[in-house]
Every structure is written in C-alpha cells, then in structure tokens.
Length: 445
Image 1 (cartoon, rainbow, N blue to C red):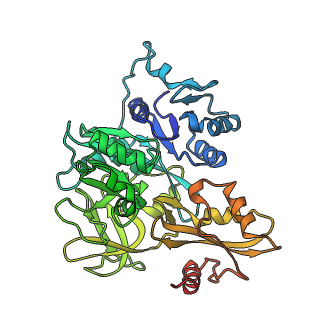
Image 2: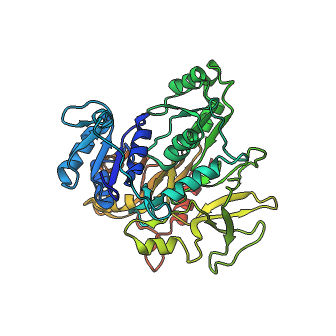
Image 3: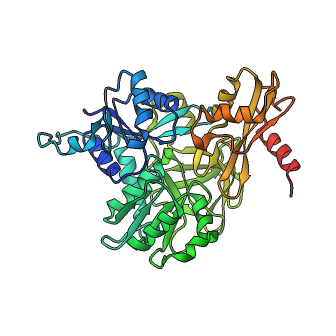
C-alpha cells in the first residue's frame, strides 16, 4: 500500500476497524467505507468509482467481496478480519515483523483520509473527500466542553451503529478513542445484547440511530437492566442532531447545558451557520424560513471526480448548501422543517428516490415511476413507489424485483401504488409533494 492508494472497508463492526483506519491513513492512503448491506453490484460501483486497490472485510461479507473481485481486476486480494479460506487474514499483516511504517509526507488540508459515499438528488452515489484536516477539526470540535467531551479512563462508549457509516466511524469510534475513552464494539444493534453491554461495561455514552431513542422510551426490556451509568445517548440523522457526510459529519448539536425540543441545536465551535432565501441567497433573520448553509473546517474538500457537483454544493465563499429548509430562534437554536433534497432517510440511512426509480424503470412492465418517503414514527420515513404499468403486474412481484437488486435499507417498505400517471412539471420534474399529499389524504386517521 502506497500514498494515494484507496482501501475499501466493507463489513460489520469489529474492534479491528480502528486498526484498519489508522493503518491506512498513517500510510497516506484513503479509506472508503462501504455498508455491509450493499449488493455486489452496488459494492462494485463504489470499488470502481473510488479506484480501490484493496478490500478489507469481515467473514459475513466475504462472499460479496469475492464476487466483486472477480469482476474488478484492480483488486487482487480480499483481506479478511478473521479467518476465511482463500482470503488474506488481517492478522498476518499486523503480525509481520518485517513491516515498518514508512515516513509519509502528508499534506493535511489536501490529502484525503476518508472517502464515504453520499447519495445526491440524482440518485448516483458520490465519493465525499474528507481530508486529514477535516477529520482532526471535527474531532476537536466534538471534544469541546459544551458538546461531547469524554473523560479518559472513565467514559465507556457502547458502539452498535455501523462503523462503515460516517457517523458510526467518526462519532461512535474515533471521537471517544481520540479522547482516551473505552469503546465497546457491537456487531449490530440487538436489544438484549445492547442493554447487557451498557450494564456489564458500565457504558456512559452511545451513538444510536433515531429508532433506538424510541426503544429506550418504550421497550419493556429496558427496565430489566441496570443502566444507571448511562448518561449520554447521542443520536443523529434526524432533528436530534444534525450533520451530513460532507461535513465529517457534524455541524450542529445541542449543548450539554441546554436543549430545546425539536431543535438540532447550535453550530459546533468554529462553525458558521446561516439561513438564506432559497431564490436569492440573501441571509434571513430570526424565525425566517430558508435554506440552511454551513461553513467550517469540517466541510469536505469536494466530491471525488465530480467538479460540477462540488461547485453546486459549495459556493466560492466556502458555504456548503445543505438542501434543508429551516430557521433559527432568538437564542441561536436551529430547526429543520423540510428538505429541498429529495433524499428519504430510513433509520438514518440515505435512500435516493431517483436511484430506486431507475431500478424500477428497468423492469419491462413499468412505464413510469416515482418514489417518495412516507413519514414513519419509528424509522423516520419509508420508501413508497408510485408506478404506471405497461402490463399487469402485482405489488408483490415489484417488491421482490427491487429486493433482489438493492440493499435492505433501500427496499420499498412503504409499499407500491399503481397510478395512471406520475404528476410532473413541464420540465419533467416529479411533483413528489403532490404524491405525498395524495397519499396522506387517503391515509388520515
């Protein structure tokens, strides 16, 4: 591995993820993280787009990794965090006494350390180039005494969120480790295992997906465990906290000394935030609704091999346009009320409607399609498809067709509805709000 190489980390949580991250970035290479639920086709796209030379994975994901290697000649071997026949064990690499860390000249503000993939409104995943400077700045912001400080030797973070997700890696793993806290890694969230880990390891902190907040409030098992040590459940990808892959990922959070219901909190240290008029870009005042823009040292270098998308996202003054509609109050607390972007957020995962629409349009019996997110109290939103048929086909067959082609979190859990036409503007833009209104009007309690 040399400076400039890209390594793909794909799998379920293991403590060895920290070794992989540190080893890759210390050598001047970049780490791209790929969700364990990706299909071989989706993983192949990310490997090729990022020009990854190595895949590091876990035993449960080896099959997908091997499938990709057969179709992608730039990757020679699958490195496994475990022991699987036909793969290179990661242990043989870290135990190699002949290996020595090279003296690499890293340029912090220019060299890419982390390359997560973020879905845009086009539905095509884009590589987010986060530099060493971006990540160090983010970790410094989070450890500020008003926001997310840890006490070395005391705090214990319980980590069930996928570390192949920007939040799980940076906030769930790197942030506590950088402050000397202990991290207890769980392969995935399972209620009893998670609660037992908090009890047995005296967990004090945990980064959790929004549905887990509801779990704490309502699940009967919670009362069966001693959770007295647990003082900071921390959540994002919803109004509880705000961020995006393009910002390493956090921009706003509620300070420890005060929060407001429904607010995403205040900007992190060294982070500027404003609300602008959607049409003119003019800065707006207190309680005026507009698009949220953010500027700070955690903002990405840009999108990989996509200068046009970078220019559209970040203006010449360094402000990144979040695509979210919101406002701020007289105390400087920010609120999100809508999205310009059409991303559906299911359990914190980003699902691009345009991507699912392209999958549906490849079906020979589908003439046209549109996908929206329908509100769900537990998961945030559920992708639902509206389909114009060429020929008769059942909802079950459509659901199975999509299930076979996309990761589990991208499936049409909100169902399928057959319509005569998809409402659109003359330009061809789908009127998703009209579809949501149509759905809501028929499903009022």
